[in-house]
Amino acid sequence: MSFFPHLLLALLEGTVAAAVLALSALGLSLVFGVMRVVNVAHGEFFMLGAMLAWWTAKMVPGGPLAGFLVALIVAPAAVGALAFVTERLLLRRINYDPEATIVATIGLLFVIQQLALSVFGADAKPVAAPFTYRIVFPWFGYSGYKLFVVFASAAILLAIWWVLARTRFGLIMRVTQFDRETATAFGIPVHQVYSAVFVAGAALVAIAAVLIVPIQQAHYLMGLDPLLMSFIVVIVGGLGSIKGSVIAALVIGMADGIVSVFFSPTLASILATLLVAFVLVVRPQGLYGAPAR
Amino acid sequence: MNANLAKVVVLHLAVLVALFAAQFLASEYAVLTLTRIMVLAIYAVGYNFLFGYTGLLSLGHAMFFATGLYAAAIGTTRAGLSAPAAFAMAIMIGFAVSLAMGAIILRASGVAFMIVTLMFSQAAFLTVLYFGGYTRGDEGIVIPDTIRAFTVLGISVDLTKPVVRYNLALLLLGSAVALTLVLVRSRFGHVLVAIRENENRTSMLGYDVARHKLIAFVISGTLSAISGATYALMFAYAGSTLASIQYSIHPLMWTLLGGASTVLGPVLGTGLMFMLVDLASSFTNANLLMVGAVLISLVLFFPKGILGTLRQRFLPWLP
Image (cartoon, rainbow over all chains, first blue to last red; front, top):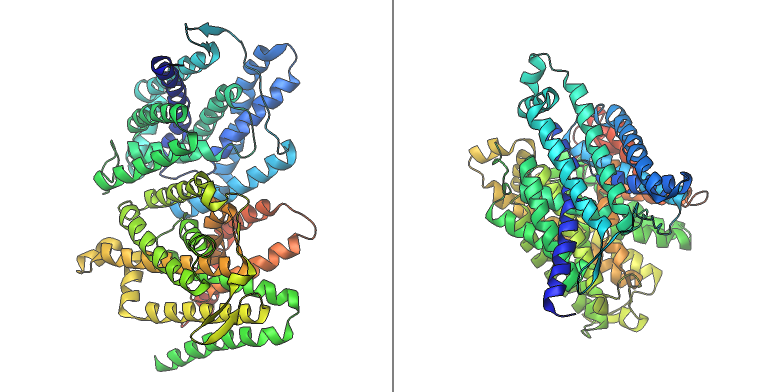
């Protein structure tokens, strides 16, 4: 294959990677933005979403499309329920202390990983795409489903922007993010907001997993990669800035896809980390983050 | 004050003497386990210096442990260095890497610091895999026995002998504990604790916070590298699992269990956790599950750890 078709392929792969990354990083960014805690088990929520997608595809009769649609409901619901319990029993009890939360969610990461290994086994599980339309370019064919993923995640991102910017719930969330104490003084049920945000973040990453699993296969160790990429995105974009996260996700996802096609995925990850080092040196608060107060 | 100093010195010496005596009583298997515990306790002691005393929670110390580990392993097997030379080189490289990493990572603070350490350490892990031709990745490097027997300053040392390994490990751990003890009781150590308690105030009092943090970071990273190099030379193995995220979390867990910001806490925590894993392995192989459960319960029910709680209740003089 000559250079230009290769480049086109790399751009397509980059767009898909960017779309998925934006979706999975958004959950982490939302939770950090509003609650000021980092959920290290975020990647395991992703993995659970993928595992549930595989499980529903197996259980639901009527072909991949039916399984996919059911998974789009089951996975976010189940992962959201787990997040709800985590928030109640863990985060609330340690009063959202940033250090304690990180340690506790690392613990959760190991627990979920081990349970997934025991329940689902160590082998990678392929999930069939809901449809198999193939777009034929003069040089190669490209999966139509991958482009569907791009559109779906763009639609979800827009919906979230709409909720945050235009609805009453979005306003309450932004108020809580801006100043927790004043929000409490004005009668906003901060604990309920936290609970809702944590569940929403988990549900979001589960949806991202259902979308991506036909491209990637489900595996009990698959959570670490999206976790680290999400971390890179929120640091580069600026901790707490949702706009920054989305922009950083697009840039990094694109670069990641391109380097993966031309060189290797491992090199892409190493380069992304070096980018973080660079951003830290030049602009420690990230692209859109406010300097520490 | 002086009575306290005497108590402190007696307690720490007693622990080291007890560890020395243990080798005459313990079985061959227990001696091996204790050696391993002591080598890894150096790692925990180094970790605690940054986390306990300076208040910087790192989630990526495996990169320093692995730096020492691979410097020693590659130095002996590829670069043709003798074991002591490779050990010295590992310390120097560990120092250089922690200095460079500290200079970059310390630009982030708070939660960002934790995330960035985790991220960099994962990049280091991927680097180990990427250069599999040198590091042999998962499979790891095995250091031949001939390299592990050497003469230094006219004394012949044979690291294949359990007794030699045990006492060397004890010597190194004793030095690490003594170093921590001296540092945390010094003026420098008090400034570190002040930074942990209130960074802005310390800076306003005229202390160079950034410099103090960097020095603490380098001491912590170098101790971790020493632990890694010792591990490679004593147990003749360096593999990529020892650079993975789990090995970044282990020292955190050991320190939390034994008690952060106590000198002996990390040593106690390492020992206890090893025993716990040993006990558990007889009826389950779900190691990760236990690690996770221990972390969660420590955070929920026992945030100060064993020695931290003891200090709070009964022994206010414990350093």
